[in-house]
Amino acid sequence: MIIIELKDLNGYYDRGKPNEWWALRNVNLQIEAGSYAAFFGASGSGKTTMLYTISGMEKPESGQVLVTGKDITNFSQKELAIYRQMTVGIVFQQFNLIPSISVLDNIALPMSFLGIPLEKRQKKAMDLLVRFGIDNLATRLPFELSGGQQQRVGIARALANDPPIVIADEPLGNLDSENANKVLDFLRDLQEKDGRTIIMVTHESWSLKDAKLIFYIKDGQIVKTEKRQGRDTPFIPPVSPNAAKQITESFKNIFENITKANKVRHEHKEDSKHKILAVIQERHRITNNEVEGLLGVSDATATRYLEELCKEEKLTREGVHGKGVFYTVKPFVRQAVAVK
Ligand code: ADP
Ligand code: MG
Image (cartoon, rainbow, N blue to C red; front, side, top):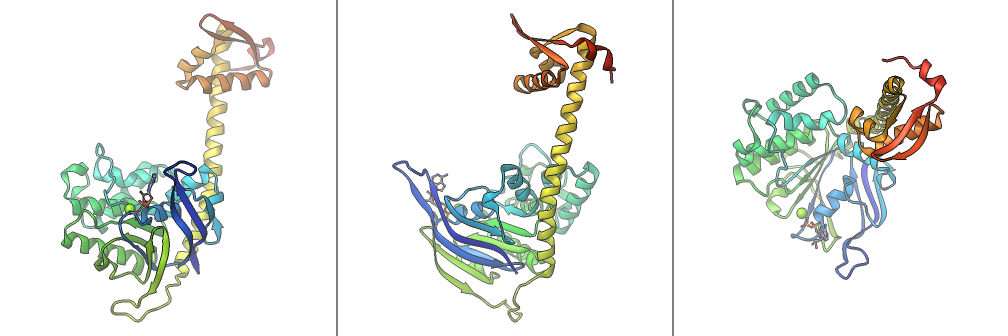
């Protein structure tokens, strides 16, 4: 089963400006679910751009990025955000850990975006620390760790939401050879033991040792594709039914999560509007600035709530007087709203 397919992909930086750069040129490729693929090329050849396009962080100028057949270039911003949180885990060369929070909190953070309860987040983060042999460092801050330890945290964080695809952008770049080899072992385990799809970017040929599919990239183009056998094991077509199931699930969750998030936001808004009505009961009138302070929201949000209440015929907009826009409550609403 094909998990990732790029079709006629073209990407530019600074399109239309004198320094326009054609970073991805007519890229076509397919990656099987559960395989270990690598992009290999010199610095500036477009490897990072390729990864960012696959992970939905860069939008191509033209072409398709199909993930299990779904074109993510058509996703809304919201869908992309959840796709990035659930479907792809990214390991960075520079680790990109948040310096002011503990190792455990760094790993637990991506789970909070999906609304996973604190206790569950911390347990999962701890399990990941155990897996990568750094549970003794849970309460430390990132700067107290060596490069090798920080990269293990980076890998653990990428796995927080259990993504079927793991993308690693030059994950060995800042490591000595012993730690670099450890990281490669971890990546291989993520493929062989977990059945995840690995996509690694590197410019050092020795680090391709576990890759089964290598795309050579030059000036944004795939100039050669190489298939390799596994090191000790015979080459088994890396079709993993587990990975396929996982990604179908994660897509289902993307849409469920958006619906859930919208529902929570809607409930929150209705709650806020009720609060405005409750307060205005006592005082008869209220300004947009007062609502800002009352709810701790921006001016735009306060005005939006107030205008919605006008549309619902609960308030009347009186106009601007000195310090703000005044709204008054309609008499029949005044009696109807109880203080919550
Ligand atoms: P690699 O990861 O292989 O080193 P990149 O994908 O980072 O390559 O960059 C490919 C090309 O695109 C380079 O020529 C680089 O200068 C250019 N590029 C990358 N990012 C940007 C950007 N944000 N704005 C303009 N040009 C960029
Ligand atoms: Mg790069």
